[in-house]
Image (cartoon, rainbow, N blue to C red):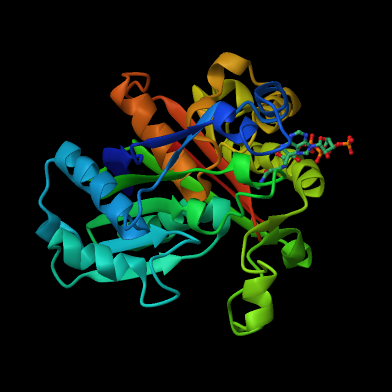
Length: 326
Ligand code: UT7
């Protein structure tokens, strides 16, 4: 049977680091509050002029090098992002050009923090159907551009990053086993960027009132996130005739340490089987999972045939999980 297997991983974070102490200097907050309520200690922030496609490019090159392929070998580029360089054209097209890939398919997927799993499942389907042989799937965000640094409820949560994987068609049992995508648009107002789109076009008032930033009802998001992250991870293992005990490593979307701990507890999964790096990067939306996957891979934490589960939750609401045999 043909499966889509991850043959290369890569990631990139911008050089500049914002620590909790940096926020203490001008906001009514403390390092203690941030660490206790979120687990975040620092986050990376893109330099002026450094855009999402630049982050994508660096992560992609690392993944391509590891896979031992050339950019011309890629049949499809999918970028999961909510902070593309422009509303359109797609950031994936900018990446295709910068990478020197052939004139392959290239498009973006918008599913907020679940974006990478959505993008992955989309590329996997095309590989399994025999339509393509190799895909580059990237999750990348420059959230610092849509965050209000005067809003203590949101600004300290987010960071910038990119993570990428090369997927290739391979015979055998190793590779992506299944993907499970969900949404509930009745929650659309709880987490998002209300402007600018066709519903809210630019006006002087919106710019003056700073109405174009990311907004979030943190508490409400938290409650639904914990429930859905646990449920969808369980759904993914059960769909493959396995149980939570079979999981070697859960690589969850990194939003908040308390969400990760509560999810693991709900699933009855020991904490050492949950990959955590939210302390060093914060919430980088679609980038958290491929960034964590690359980190774990390069640190030698993933062994052949390990059962990995990736799960995510984000604006929309969207939530999703992938089960894979490494
Ligand atoms: O990526 C997927 C989507 N995002 C998420 O999954 C994020 C989900 N939500 C969260 O992670 C949490 O809700 C937050 C970290 C955003 C907030 O934590 P919380 O435990 O839900 O805090 P809260 O909003 O209930 O606020 C608790 C208190 C409030 O004070 P009072 O009303 O109890 O006096 C806030 O005003 O903490 C106060 N507070 C702060 N204090 C110091 C809120 N932000 C801060 C701050 N520093 N930065």
